[in-house]
Image (tube, rainbow, N blue to C red; front, side, top):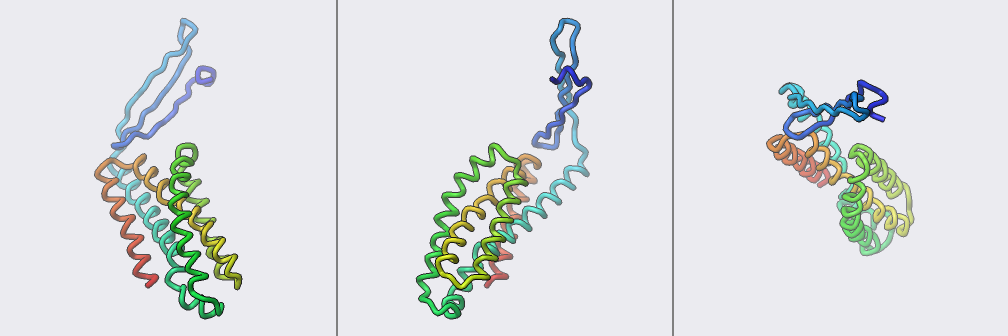
Length: 193
C-alpha cells in the first residue's frame, strides 16, 4: 500500500527532538525502495512543545488532584448534611484508593493501544461526571459507588501523561516537566485545604 501512493511520507517523532521521515517508492525490480531520512527539529519548536505539553499536563494533574481529594476534605461536612455516620462516606474515600491502584494497571495496558490524549479525555470526562453525581445526590450508596468508579477514571490520567511527556521531550526536558506537573498536584492540595 505504501508503493501505490508514491510519494508517501510518514513522519515519526523520536526522543531528543529528531524526526524520522520514511518514504517508499516502487523499484525497478518490483519491490520497494525504503528511504529513511533524519531531520533535526529546530530548537524553538522543541521549547514550544515543552512549554505547551508541560502546561497542559500540569493543568490536568491539578484538576485530577482536585477531583480526587475533594470528597476526603469535605467528608465531615457531607456526613453532617446527610445526617449519616462519617464511616459510611469514609468507605468511598477508602475505595477510591483501591480502584485507583487497580486502574493504574489497566491504564498502562490501555496506553499501549490508545493515544494518550484519548485516555486523558476519558479520564477527565469520567471524573467530572462522578464528581457531579456526588454533588447532586443524597444517597450514600450512590456516593460510594460513584467515588469508587472515580478511582478508575483518575487512573487514566497519570500513565498517559507520562507517555506523552516521554514521547515528545528529551531526557532533560522530561525531568523538568515531571517536576512541574507534580507541582500542579501540590498546588491543588493547598487549594483544597
